[in-house]
Image 1 (cartoon, rainbow, N blue to C red):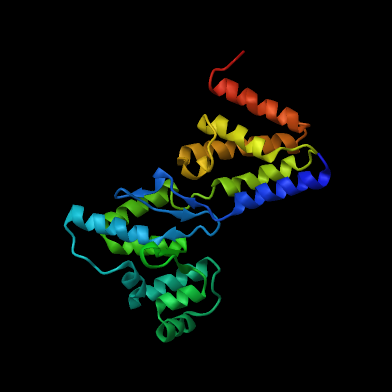
Image 2: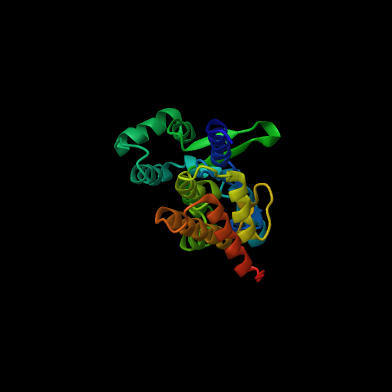
Length: 253
């Protein structure tokens, strides 16, 4: 295969891996509502949180405290949001400037300007996304049960799980780039067969946290083996993956 064609295939595949996929893993269930997350931005879905909050109110007979947007707009939450944004390096202003912005433009518009809150779709398809730290702050304000569940999510590292397929694949693709004959789609399929026992389009986006951790360990180990010179070619890499698959699924010939 000509070098230019190989490079083009690799670039197309890497571009597809970096698109803003919406994750829907069952690890993100909250009151039977799947909380969606974008891989590219890390944003969590506030509209999903509102549905979970509605379910919580019904199950636990709670009075409504207002919409999610109302919680964000509450004056007492402005200071909390400021320090979250300050701690994560999103803003460098002092709190008086931030409060002034919120008073002039409103909290939601201010957050949109800062790039931590966005609305996508329209009418029936309208949905709201926000920075995961702000999402957690809102969730913990809504009700005692949501507070408890969010604390557990944080402790278990489910909300801020940053080992999604696009992020994990970067290190391995950098390592295999030293080989001249890399078939990136074949490599991804082989890894999926090891971890998930099969290959399907976007299968990584619905993987459990345990499966994603397994995928991370596998890709990190393979990347290390390539960088250290233990795996010296792409065919050798694929054979190593096949060996791992055989051992895992007792397919020893």
